[in-house]
Length: 472
Ligand SMILES: Cc1cc2nc3c(=O)[nH]c(=O)nc-3n(C[C@H](O)[C@H](O)[C@H](O)COP(=O)(O)OP(=O)(O)OC[C@H]3O[C@@H](n4cnc5c(N)ncnc54)[C@H](O)[C@@H]3O)c2cc1C
Image 1 (cartoon, protein in one colour):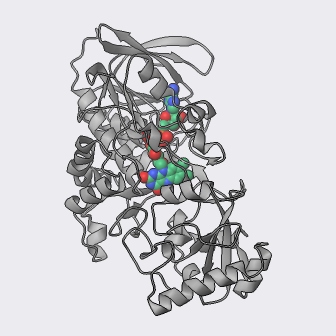
Image 2 (image 1 turned 90 degrees about the vertical axis):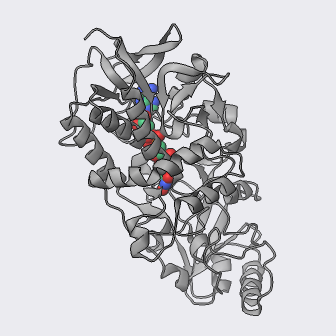
Image 3 (image 1 turned 120 degrees about the vertical axis):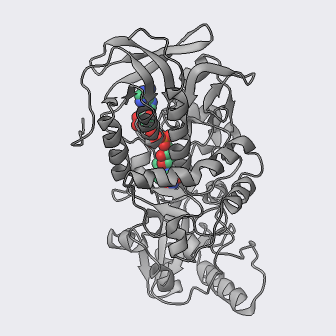
Protein backbone atom coordinates (compact mmCIF):
# COMPACT_ATOMS: atom_id res chain seq x y z
CA UNK A 1 0.00 0.00 0.00
CA UNK A 2 1.28 3.48 -0.84
CA UNK A 3 0.75 5.93 2.01
CA UNK A 4 1.11 9.69 1.68
CA UNK A 5 2.17 11.55 4.81
CA UNK A 6 -0.48 13.74 6.39
CA UNK A 7 -3.56 11.97 5.04
CA UNK A 8 -6.24 10.89 7.53
CA UNK A 9 -5.77 7.12 7.19
CA UNK A 10 -7.73 4.92 9.57
CA UNK A 11 -6.67 1.31 10.00
CA UNK A 12 -9.82 0.16 11.76
CA UNK A 13 -13.02 0.28 9.79
CA UNK A 14 -15.35 2.67 11.69
CA UNK A 15 -18.49 1.12 13.19
CA UNK A 16 -20.68 3.61 11.30
CA UNK A 17 -20.52 6.82 9.29
CA UNK A 18 -22.57 9.95 8.82
CA UNK A 19 -21.62 10.20 5.14
CA UNK A 20 -19.90 7.16 3.65
CA UNK A 21 -18.00 7.99 0.45
CA UNK A 22 -16.99 5.14 -1.85
CA UNK A 23 -13.85 5.86 -3.90
CA UNK A 24 -10.90 8.22 -3.44
CA UNK A 25 -10.77 9.98 -6.82
CA UNK A 26 -11.56 13.65 -7.16
CA UNK A 27 -15.33 13.12 -6.84
CA UNK A 28 -14.86 11.20 -3.60
CA UNK A 29 -12.31 13.63 -2.14
CA UNK A 30 -14.50 16.65 -2.96
CA UNK A 31 -17.56 14.89 -1.46
CA UNK A 32 -15.65 13.91 1.68
CA UNK A 33 -14.41 17.43 2.29
CA UNK A 34 -17.80 19.03 1.59
CA UNK A 35 -19.52 16.60 3.98
CA UNK A 36 -16.88 17.25 6.63
CA UNK A 37 -17.23 21.01 6.12
CA UNK A 38 -20.97 20.57 6.72
CA UNK A 39 -20.12 19.07 10.09
CA UNK A 40 -20.78 15.37 9.39
CA UNK A 41 -18.59 12.43 10.29
CA UNK A 42 -17.40 11.53 6.79
CA UNK A 43 -15.63 8.27 5.99
CA UNK A 44 -14.08 7.27 2.67
CA UNK A 45 -13.49 3.69 1.55
CA UNK A 46 -10.92 3.01 -1.18
CA UNK A 47 -10.65 -0.39 -2.79
CA UNK A 48 -7.01 -0.22 -3.88
CA UNK A 49 -3.79 0.48 -2.00
CA UNK A 50 -3.39 4.04 -3.30
CA UNK A 51 -5.60 7.09 -3.57
CA UNK A 52 -6.82 8.73 -6.71
CA UNK A 53 -8.14 6.19 -9.25
CA UNK A 54 -8.18 7.64 -12.76
CA UNK A 55 -7.89 11.16 -11.36
CA UNK A 56 -4.19 10.79 -10.57
CA UNK A 57 -3.46 9.19 -13.95
CA UNK A 58 -5.24 11.92 -15.84
CA UNK A 59 -3.82 14.85 -17.76
CA UNK A 60 -5.29 16.98 -14.98
CA UNK A 61 -7.20 19.40 -17.21
CA UNK A 62 -10.35 20.98 -15.81
CA UNK A 63 -12.89 22.90 -17.88
CA UNK A 64 -13.82 26.12 -16.08
CA UNK A 65 -14.97 29.39 -17.65
CA UNK A 66 -14.42 32.97 -16.54
CA UNK A 67 -11.40 32.26 -14.32
CA UNK A 68 -8.57 34.50 -13.18
CA UNK A 69 -6.10 32.46 -15.27
CA UNK A 70 -8.17 33.01 -18.43
CA UNK A 71 -8.46 36.73 -17.72
CA UNK A 72 -4.71 36.96 -17.15
CA UNK A 73 -4.21 35.55 -20.66
CA UNK A 74 -6.82 37.82 -22.19
CA UNK A 75 -9.20 34.92 -22.87
CA UNK A 76 -12.82 36.06 -22.94
CA UNK A 77 -14.96 33.21 -21.69
CA UNK A 78 -18.23 32.98 -19.83
CA UNK A 79 -20.61 30.52 -18.23
CA UNK A 80 -23.02 31.11 -21.12
CA UNK A 81 -20.39 30.20 -23.72
CA UNK A 82 -19.38 27.13 -21.71
CA UNK A 83 -23.03 26.04 -21.57
CA UNK A 84 -23.47 26.50 -25.31
CA UNK A 85 -20.30 24.52 -26.06
CA UNK A 86 -21.30 21.71 -23.67
CA UNK A 87 -24.68 21.28 -25.35
CA UNK A 88 -23.23 21.55 -28.87
CA UNK A 89 -20.45 19.07 -28.14
CA UNK A 90 -22.95 16.73 -26.49
CA UNK A 91 -25.14 16.83 -29.58
CA UNK A 92 -27.92 18.21 -27.35
CA UNK A 93 -28.34 14.71 -25.97
CA UNK A 94 -27.12 15.88 -22.54
CA UNK A 95 -29.34 16.05 -19.49
CA UNK A 96 -29.77 19.84 -19.64
CA UNK A 97 -30.44 20.03 -15.90
CA UNK A 98 -26.99 18.53 -15.22
CA UNK A 99 -25.30 20.87 -17.70
CA UNK A 100 -27.00 23.79 -15.95
CA UNK A 101 -25.91 22.40 -12.59
CA UNK A 102 -22.29 22.23 -13.77
CA UNK A 103 -22.48 25.76 -15.15
CA UNK A 104 -24.16 27.21 -12.07
CA UNK A 105 -21.52 25.81 -9.71
CA UNK A 106 -18.33 25.73 -11.79
CA UNK A 107 -16.90 29.09 -10.74
CA UNK A 108 -17.69 28.67 -7.05
CA UNK A 109 -16.13 25.17 -7.13
CA UNK A 110 -13.04 26.53 -8.90
CA UNK A 111 -12.76 29.17 -6.15
CA UNK A 112 -13.36 26.55 -3.44
CA UNK A 113 -10.53 24.42 -4.88
CA UNK A 114 -8.24 27.43 -5.04
CA UNK A 115 -9.14 28.33 -1.48
CA UNK A 116 -7.83 24.87 -0.55
CA UNK A 117 -4.54 25.62 -2.31
CA UNK A 118 -5.15 24.09 -5.75
CA UNK A 119 -3.01 25.85 -8.36
CA UNK A 120 -3.67 25.95 -12.10
CA UNK A 121 -1.04 26.32 -14.84
CA UNK A 122 -1.12 27.77 -18.33
CA UNK A 123 -4.50 27.60 -20.07
CA UNK A 124 -4.81 25.70 -23.37
CA UNK A 125 -7.55 25.03 -25.87
CA UNK A 126 -8.55 21.40 -26.29
CA UNK A 127 -11.35 19.31 -27.64
CA UNK A 128 -14.79 20.88 -27.86
CA UNK A 129 -13.73 24.30 -26.51
CA UNK A 130 -14.50 27.35 -28.61
CA UNK A 131 -12.00 29.28 -26.45
CA UNK A 132 -9.07 27.95 -24.38
CA UNK A 133 -10.45 26.72 -21.03
CA UNK A 134 -8.38 23.65 -20.08
CA UNK A 135 -6.93 24.44 -16.65
CA UNK A 136 -4.05 22.05 -15.85
CA UNK A 137 -3.21 21.04 -12.31
CA UNK A 138 -1.22 18.38 -10.46
CA UNK A 139 -4.06 16.05 -9.54
CA UNK A 140 -2.23 14.15 -6.81
CA UNK A 141 -1.37 17.43 -5.07
CA UNK A 142 -5.01 18.49 -5.43
CA UNK A 143 -6.35 15.32 -3.80
CA UNK A 144 -3.79 15.51 -1.01
CA UNK A 145 -4.94 19.05 -0.23
CA UNK A 146 -8.61 18.07 -0.15
CA UNK A 147 -8.02 14.96 1.97
CA UNK A 148 -5.75 16.80 4.38
CA UNK A 149 -8.37 19.51 4.85
CA UNK A 150 -11.08 16.86 5.34
CA UNK A 151 -8.89 15.03 7.87
CA UNK A 152 -8.52 18.21 9.93
CA UNK A 153 -12.32 18.26 10.17
CA UNK A 154 -12.41 14.68 11.41
CA UNK A 155 -12.96 12.76 8.15
CA UNK A 156 -11.32 9.34 7.78
CA UNK A 157 -9.88 7.31 4.88
CA UNK A 158 -9.89 3.50 4.94
CA UNK A 159 -7.75 1.88 2.25
CA UNK A 160 -7.90 -1.56 0.63
CA UNK A 161 -11.55 -1.89 1.54
CA UNK A 162 -14.02 -2.74 -1.21
CA UNK A 163 -17.67 -1.77 -1.16
CA UNK A 164 -19.55 -4.81 -2.41
CA UNK A 165 -23.27 -4.24 -1.88
CA UNK A 166 -25.53 -1.36 -0.90
CA UNK A 167 -27.79 -2.17 2.01
CA UNK A 168 -31.24 -1.18 0.77
CA UNK A 169 -34.19 -1.19 3.15
CA UNK A 170 -37.61 0.45 2.89
CA UNK A 171 -36.69 2.51 -0.16
CA UNK A 172 -33.42 3.85 1.14
CA UNK A 173 -29.78 2.94 1.48
CA UNK A 174 -28.78 2.40 5.08
CA UNK A 175 -25.20 1.27 4.70
CA UNK A 176 -22.72 -0.74 2.69
CA UNK A 177 -21.43 -4.31 2.89
CA UNK A 178 -17.68 -4.22 2.48
CA UNK A 179 -14.78 -6.61 2.13
CA UNK A 180 -11.61 -5.76 4.04
CA UNK A 181 -8.07 -6.43 2.81
CA UNK A 182 -8.00 -9.47 5.13
CA UNK A 183 -11.00 -10.94 3.30
CA UNK A 184 -13.26 -10.28 6.27
CA UNK A 185 -16.75 -9.01 5.40
CA UNK A 186 -18.44 -6.29 7.44
CA UNK A 187 -21.46 -4.02 7.26
CA UNK A 188 -21.01 -0.26 7.73
CA UNK A 189 -24.26 1.56 8.55
CA UNK A 190 -24.41 5.14 7.26
CA UNK A 191 -26.89 8.01 7.12
CA UNK A 192 -26.02 8.61 3.47
CA UNK A 193 -23.77 6.98 0.88
CA UNK A 194 -21.96 8.73 -1.98
CA UNK A 195 -20.95 6.57 -4.93
CA UNK A 196 -17.69 7.97 -6.29
CA UNK A 197 -16.32 4.74 -7.66
CA UNK A 198 -15.39 6.08 -11.11
CA UNK A 199 -16.10 4.43 -14.43
CA UNK A 200 -15.39 1.01 -15.89
CA UNK A 201 -12.52 1.55 -18.30
CA UNK A 202 -10.83 -1.42 -16.57
CA UNK A 203 -13.75 -3.83 -16.89
CA UNK A 204 -13.62 -6.06 -19.96
CA UNK A 205 -16.99 -7.44 -18.89
CA UNK A 206 -18.84 -4.11 -18.83
CA UNK A 207 -17.06 -2.79 -21.93
CA UNK A 208 -18.08 -5.92 -23.82
CA UNK A 209 -21.66 -5.39 -22.58
CA UNK A 210 -22.01 -1.67 -23.29
CA UNK A 211 -19.29 -0.84 -25.82
CA UNK A 212 -18.32 -3.85 -27.93
CA UNK A 213 -16.98 -1.40 -30.55
CA UNK A 214 -14.06 -0.76 -28.13
CA UNK A 215 -12.78 -4.33 -28.48
CA UNK A 216 -9.60 -3.22 -30.25
CA UNK A 217 -9.03 -0.04 -28.26
CA UNK A 218 -6.25 0.14 -25.67
CA UNK A 219 -7.27 0.48 -22.01
CA UNK A 220 -6.22 2.96 -19.31
CA UNK A 221 -7.69 4.28 -16.07
CA UNK A 222 -7.44 3.49 -12.39
CA UNK A 223 -6.95 -0.18 -11.57
CA UNK A 224 -10.05 -0.12 -9.36
CA UNK A 225 -12.29 1.41 -12.04
CA UNK A 226 -14.30 -1.69 -12.82
CA UNK A 227 -17.83 -0.39 -12.57
CA UNK A 228 -18.50 -1.57 -9.00
CA UNK A 229 -20.60 1.48 -8.16
CA UNK A 230 -22.63 1.17 -11.33
CA UNK A 231 -23.33 -2.49 -10.62
CA UNK A 232 -24.21 -1.88 -6.96
CA UNK A 233 -26.63 0.89 -7.92
CA UNK A 234 -28.18 -1.09 -10.77
CA UNK A 235 -28.70 -3.99 -8.37
CA UNK A 236 -31.10 -1.84 -6.35
CA UNK A 237 -32.87 -0.37 -9.37
CA UNK A 238 -30.83 2.68 -10.45
CA UNK A 239 -31.37 3.93 -13.97
CA UNK A 240 -28.44 4.42 -16.32
CA UNK A 241 -27.79 6.88 -19.14
CA UNK A 242 -25.52 7.43 -22.13
CA UNK A 243 -24.10 3.93 -22.61
CA UNK A 244 -24.28 4.35 -26.42
CA UNK A 245 -21.81 7.24 -26.15
CA UNK A 246 -18.81 5.41 -24.72
CA UNK A 247 -15.90 6.38 -26.88
CA UNK A 248 -12.16 5.91 -27.02
CA UNK A 249 -9.69 8.79 -26.95
CA UNK A 250 -7.36 9.39 -29.85
CA UNK A 251 -3.71 10.20 -29.18
CA UNK A 252 -2.16 7.32 -27.27
CA UNK A 253 1.08 5.68 -28.41
CA UNK A 254 -0.21 2.86 -30.60
CA UNK A 255 1.34 0.03 -28.61
CA UNK A 256 1.75 -0.17 -24.84
CA UNK A 257 4.94 1.78 -24.21
CA UNK A 258 7.06 2.03 -21.05
CA UNK A 259 6.91 5.83 -21.18
CA UNK A 260 3.20 6.01 -21.91
CA UNK A 261 1.18 7.37 -19.02
CA UNK A 262 -2.12 6.60 -20.65
CA UNK A 263 -2.82 10.11 -21.85
CA UNK A 264 -1.27 10.28 -25.29
CA UNK A 265 -0.49 13.46 -27.20
CA UNK A 266 -2.73 15.58 -29.38
CA UNK A 267 -0.27 17.17 -31.78
CA UNK A 268 -3.24 17.41 -34.17
CA UNK A 269 -4.62 20.25 -32.03
CA UNK A 270 -1.40 22.21 -32.50
CA UNK A 271 -1.22 21.72 -36.28
CA UNK A 272 -0.29 18.06 -36.98
CA UNK A 273 -2.22 15.93 -39.44
CA UNK A 274 -3.43 12.38 -38.80
CA UNK A 275 -2.77 9.79 -41.51
CA UNK A 276 -3.69 6.12 -41.81
CA UNK A 277 -1.70 3.13 -43.06
CA UNK A 278 -2.32 4.27 -46.64
CA UNK A 279 -0.58 7.57 -45.84
CA UNK A 280 -3.88 9.44 -46.24
CA UNK A 281 -5.71 11.79 -43.93
CA UNK A 282 -8.94 10.25 -42.72
CA UNK A 283 -10.59 12.82 -40.45
CA UNK A 284 -10.97 16.54 -39.73
CA UNK A 285 -8.24 16.72 -37.07
CA UNK A 286 -9.87 19.65 -35.26
CA UNK A 287 -12.75 17.42 -34.16
CA UNK A 288 -13.31 16.09 -30.70
CA UNK A 289 -10.67 13.41 -29.93
CA UNK A 290 -13.46 10.97 -29.14
CA UNK A 291 -14.84 11.35 -32.65
CA UNK A 292 -11.35 11.08 -34.11
CA UNK A 293 -10.92 7.91 -32.01
CA UNK A 294 -14.10 6.42 -33.50
CA UNK A 295 -12.87 7.01 -37.04
CA UNK A 296 -9.31 5.88 -36.21
CA UNK A 297 -10.58 2.55 -34.86
CA UNK A 298 -12.13 1.89 -38.26
CA UNK A 299 -8.88 2.49 -40.21
CA UNK A 300 -7.30 -0.58 -41.79
CA UNK A 301 -4.79 -2.10 -39.35
CA UNK A 302 -5.89 0.29 -36.58
CA UNK A 303 -2.58 2.19 -36.34
CA UNK A 304 -2.46 5.77 -37.51
CA UNK A 305 0.23 8.45 -37.29
CA UNK A 306 0.20 12.04 -36.12
CA UNK A 307 2.60 13.73 -38.52
CA UNK A 308 4.06 17.16 -37.84
CA UNK A 309 7.01 19.47 -38.34
CA UNK A 310 9.31 21.40 -36.06
CA UNK A 311 6.89 24.36 -35.94
CA UNK A 312 4.39 22.08 -34.19
CA UNK A 313 7.07 20.59 -31.95
CA UNK A 314 8.03 24.12 -30.90
CA UNK A 315 4.56 24.49 -29.34
CA UNK A 316 5.24 21.67 -26.94
CA UNK A 317 4.37 22.23 -23.30
CA UNK A 318 5.87 19.87 -20.72
CA UNK A 319 3.24 20.91 -18.16
CA UNK A 320 0.34 19.64 -20.22
CA UNK A 321 0.68 15.92 -20.97
CA UNK A 322 -1.38 16.04 -24.18
CA UNK A 323 0.95 18.73 -25.52
CA UNK A 324 4.24 17.35 -24.15
CA UNK A 325 5.69 16.55 -27.58
CA UNK A 326 9.28 17.39 -26.66
CA UNK A 327 9.12 15.11 -23.62
CA UNK A 328 8.02 12.25 -25.88
CA UNK A 329 10.80 13.08 -28.27
CA UNK A 330 13.30 12.79 -25.41
CA UNK A 331 11.71 9.45 -24.46
CA UNK A 332 12.32 8.16 -27.98
CA UNK A 333 8.63 7.94 -28.82
CA UNK A 334 8.71 10.04 -31.99
CA UNK A 335 10.00 8.98 -35.41
CA UNK A 336 12.27 11.71 -36.88
CA UNK A 337 13.18 12.54 -40.46
CA UNK A 338 14.86 15.35 -42.36
CA UNK A 339 12.21 15.24 -45.10
CA UNK A 340 8.67 14.00 -45.62
CA UNK A 341 10.03 11.42 -48.07
CA UNK A 342 12.35 9.99 -45.41
CA UNK A 343 9.52 9.98 -42.84
CA UNK A 344 7.29 8.10 -45.28
CA UNK A 345 10.02 5.45 -45.69
CA UNK A 346 10.58 5.13 -41.94
CA UNK A 347 6.86 4.66 -41.36
CA UNK A 348 6.74 2.07 -44.18
CA UNK A 349 3.88 3.93 -45.86
CA UNK A 350 3.16 3.32 -49.57
CA UNK A 351 5.69 5.10 -51.76
CA UNK A 352 4.69 8.70 -52.49
CA UNK A 353 1.58 8.55 -50.29
CA UNK A 354 2.65 10.79 -47.39
CA UNK A 355 4.52 13.13 -49.71
CA UNK A 356 1.35 13.68 -51.75
CA UNK A 357 -0.77 14.09 -48.61
CA UNK A 358 1.51 16.74 -47.07
CA UNK A 359 2.03 18.55 -50.39
CA UNK A 360 -1.73 18.74 -51.02
CA UNK A 361 -2.42 19.82 -47.43
CA UNK A 362 0.13 22.64 -47.67
CA UNK A 363 -1.02 23.73 -51.13
CA UNK A 364 -4.69 23.99 -50.13
CA UNK A 365 -3.80 26.08 -47.09
CA UNK A 366 -1.57 28.39 -49.18
CA UNK A 367 -4.24 28.78 -51.87
CA UNK A 368 -7.16 29.01 -49.44
CA UNK A 369 -8.95 26.00 -50.93
CA UNK A 370 -11.42 24.03 -48.80
CA UNK A 371 -9.93 21.04 -47.03
CA UNK A 372 -11.19 17.69 -48.41
CA UNK A 373 -11.83 16.31 -44.89
CA UNK A 374 -13.36 19.60 -43.75
CA UNK A 375 -10.67 20.98 -41.47
CA UNK A 376 -11.00 24.71 -40.86
CA UNK A 377 -9.52 25.00 -37.38
CA UNK A 378 -6.70 23.59 -35.30
CA UNK A 379 -8.89 22.49 -32.40
CA UNK A 380 -12.63 22.80 -32.05
CA UNK A 381 -13.35 26.26 -33.42
CA UNK A 382 -9.97 27.63 -32.41
CA UNK A 383 -6.75 28.41 -34.37
CA UNK A 384 -6.04 28.15 -38.10
CA UNK A 385 -4.11 25.29 -39.77
CA UNK A 386 -0.69 26.15 -41.21
CA UNK A 387 1.56 24.36 -43.74
CA UNK A 388 3.80 21.55 -42.48
CA UNK A 389 7.03 22.60 -44.14
CA UNK A 390 9.66 23.20 -41.46
CA UNK A 391 12.04 20.23 -41.09
CA UNK A 392 12.74 18.06 -39.24
CA UNK A 393 9.49 16.14 -39.47
CA UNK A 394 8.05 13.91 -36.77
CA UNK A 395 5.46 11.16 -36.37
CA UNK A 396 3.94 9.34 -33.45
CA UNK A 397 2.27 5.97 -34.07
CA UNK A 398 -1.12 6.70 -32.59
CA UNK A 399 -4.03 4.61 -31.41
CA UNK A 400 -7.26 4.96 -29.45
CA UNK A 401 -7.65 4.22 -25.76
CA UNK A 402 -10.60 3.85 -23.39
CA UNK A 403 -9.71 6.27 -20.57
CA UNK A 404 -13.12 6.91 -19.16
CA UNK A 405 -16.65 5.68 -19.76
CA UNK A 406 -18.80 8.87 -19.53
CA UNK A 407 -22.08 7.02 -18.99
CA UNK A 408 -23.50 5.99 -15.64
CA UNK A 409 -26.30 6.23 -13.12
CA UNK A 410 -29.11 8.74 -13.47
CA UNK A 411 -29.11 11.51 -10.88
CA UNK A 412 -31.15 14.63 -10.16
CA UNK A 413 -29.77 18.08 -9.44
CA UNK A 414 -29.11 17.13 -5.81
CA UNK A 415 -26.99 14.24 -7.09
CA UNK A 416 -29.52 11.78 -5.68
CA UNK A 417 -29.41 8.52 -7.61
CA UNK A 418 -32.69 7.94 -9.47
CA UNK A 419 -34.33 4.60 -10.19
CA UNK A 420 -35.56 3.59 -13.64
CA UNK A 421 -38.79 5.53 -13.05
CA UNK A 422 -36.98 8.72 -12.09
CA UNK A 423 -37.67 8.43 -8.36
CA UNK A 424 -34.80 9.12 -5.95
CA UNK A 425 -33.33 6.11 -4.18
CA UNK A 426 -33.30 7.29 -0.59
CA UNK A 427 -30.00 8.45 0.90
CA UNK A 428 -27.92 7.39 -2.12
CA UNK A 429 -25.88 10.03 -3.98
CA UNK A 430 -23.39 9.78 -6.83
CA UNK A 431 -20.67 11.95 -8.35
CA UNK A 432 -17.89 11.82 -10.88
CA UNK A 433 -17.45 9.33 -13.67
CA UNK A 434 -20.11 6.97 -12.29
CA UNK A 435 -22.76 9.59 -13.18
CA UNK A 436 -24.42 9.48 -16.61
CA UNK A 437 -26.30 12.09 -18.59
CA UNK A 438 -23.99 15.07 -18.35
CA UNK A 439 -21.73 14.71 -21.40
CA UNK A 440 -24.31 13.64 -23.99
CA UNK A 441 -23.02 12.16 -27.23
CA UNK A 442 -19.68 14.01 -27.33
CA UNK A 443 -17.01 15.21 -24.97
CA UNK A 444 -15.30 18.47 -24.02
CA UNK A 445 -11.80 18.15 -22.57
CA UNK A 446 -11.67 18.86 -18.87
CA UNK A 447 -15.29 18.12 -18.12
CA UNK A 448 -14.65 14.76 -16.44
CA UNK A 449 -12.33 16.32 -13.89
CA UNK A 450 -14.66 19.32 -13.75
CA UNK A 451 -17.67 17.09 -13.20
CA UNK A 452 -15.86 15.11 -10.49
CA UNK A 453 -15.02 18.30 -8.59
CA UNK A 454 -18.33 20.13 -9.03
CA UNK A 455 -20.69 17.20 -8.56
CA UNK A 456 -18.43 15.66 -5.91
CA UNK A 457 -18.61 18.76 -3.78
CA UNK A 458 -22.37 19.14 -4.27
CA UNK A 459 -23.03 15.46 -3.53
CA UNK A 460 -21.11 15.74 -0.26
CA UNK A 461 -23.11 18.81 0.74
CA UNK A 462 -26.45 17.18 -0.10
CA UNK A 463 -25.50 13.88 1.54
CA UNK A 464 -24.54 15.80 4.67
CA UNK A 465 -28.03 17.31 4.79
CA UNK A 466 -29.66 13.88 5.19
CA UNK A 467 -31.00 13.62 8.71
CA UNK A 468 -29.26 11.15 10.96
CA UNK A 469 -31.32 8.12 11.85
CA UNK A 470 -28.44 6.19 13.35
CA UNK A 471 -27.95 5.82 17.05
CA UNK A 472 -24.52 7.29 17.76
C1 LIG B 1 -4.97 8.81 -18.76
C2 LIG B 1 -6.19 9.61 -18.45
C3 LIG B 1 -6.21 10.96 -18.76
C4 LIG B 1 -7.34 11.73 -18.46
N1 LIG B 1 -7.28 13.07 -18.65
C5 LIG B 1 -8.35 13.83 -18.30
C6 LIG B 1 -8.27 15.26 -18.33
O1 LIG B 1 -7.22 15.85 -18.59
N2 LIG B 1 -9.40 15.96 -18.03
C7 LIG B 1 -10.57 15.36 -17.67
O2 LIG B 1 -11.55 16.03 -17.43
N3 LIG B 1 -10.63 14.01 -17.57
C8 LIG B 1 -9.55 13.24 -17.83
N4 LIG B 1 -9.63 11.89 -17.67
C9 LIG B 1 -10.84 11.31 -17.07
C10 LIG B 1 -10.87 11.65 -15.57
O3 LIG B 1 -9.58 11.45 -15.02
C11 LIG B 1 -11.86 10.81 -14.80
O4 LIG B 1 -13.12 10.75 -15.43
C12 LIG B 1 -12.07 11.40 -13.39
O5 LIG B 1 -10.83 11.59 -12.76
C13 LIG B 1 -12.94 10.46 -12.57
O6 LIG B 1 -12.92 10.87 -11.24
P1 LIG B 1 -13.74 10.02 -10.19
O7 LIG B 1 -13.43 10.58 -8.86
O8 LIG B 1 -15.14 9.90 -10.61
O9 LIG B 1 -13.15 8.53 -10.33
P2 LIG B 1 -11.67 8.00 -10.09
O10 LIG B 1 -10.68 9.07 -10.03
O11 LIG B 1 -11.44 6.93 -11.09
O12 LIG B 1 -11.76 7.35 -8.64
C14 LIG B 1 -12.60 6.26 -8.38
C15 LIG B 1 -12.02 5.51 -7.19
O13 LIG B 1 -13.00 4.58 -6.71
C16 LIG B 1 -12.33 3.41 -6.31
N5 LIG B 1 -13.29 2.32 -6.27
C17 LIG B 1 -13.86 1.67 -7.32
N6 LIG B 1 -14.68 0.71 -6.90
C18 LIG B 1 -14.65 0.75 -5.54
C19 LIG B 1 -15.29 -0.01 -4.54
N7 LIG B 1 -16.11 -1.02 -4.84
N8 LIG B 1 -15.04 0.28 -3.23
C20 LIG B 1 -14.18 1.29 -2.90
N9 LIG B 1 -13.53 2.03 -3.83
C21 LIG B 1 -13.78 1.77 -5.13
C22 LIG B 1 -11.27 3.25 -7.37
O14 LIG B 1 -10.25 2.36 -6.97
C23 LIG B 1 -10.80 4.68 -7.55
O15 LIG B 1 -9.75 4.99 -6.67
C24 LIG B 1 -8.50 11.11 -17.92
C25 LIG B 1 -8.47 9.75 -17.59
C26 LIG B 1 -7.32 9.01 -17.84
C27 LIG B 1 -7.28 7.56 -17.44
